[in-house]
Length: 286
Image 1 (cartoon, rainbow, N blue to C red):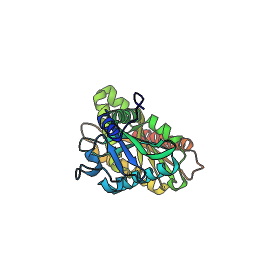
Image 2: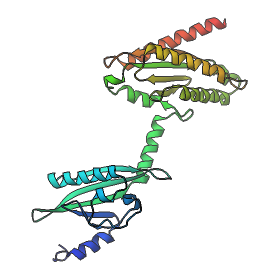
Image 3: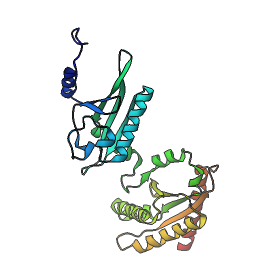
Image 4: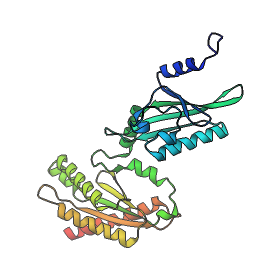
């Protein structure tokens, strides 16, 4: 009611079309009846009119259209609204929209669905950037210890096992920093990280734990495969070394055989193997 009078249909349309937000109304057949704004994302810029059509008919991406339509049917059937954020690819980066829908009743009778679409791109991009910064090592671009600690607390399904962990510790980083300066120490760490990125499988995860220590986690792997990856990395480090900086690292690995194994325990085992490798390296240099 407004000033004691009911809205006419034309008044309702004027109200929605003038709203400083993207509002829409659909009837019980899930067809659009009123919209405040028609976004080109909806139909790929083909036909600006969506009135009288369902999402299945208007979306260029039929998978998205079907998902929205099925959600409308669920709201009509259950009387329960919905809310979620959708991502839409764009040339300058993904756009994000918060979509909220509720059933509309009048005198106890279902009239249709009212929806609100809000552009939350700025907020979502900021959220994703903060998340990235909190889990990414800024020097190397690899994940950081915070990310790994979160991952180690997760429960992984059995089909991801065995999980192999490789611990790397850069040799001579302190000497490089002391003799040549941190500029060259940082260069060594970045080059080590670059070689790791190039060498590991697509589903593997690599992180800088801090200082000169790195960790690689390989899913669905075997001891032979992890051992082969460690040997491959040593060879890559050797080939990537030059007069500017020499790449070298001690390595150790261990395998978590199944979901009952502790990744923390597996990490300690790999870490102990790495220190044993470092000790052997020191012996050879004497």
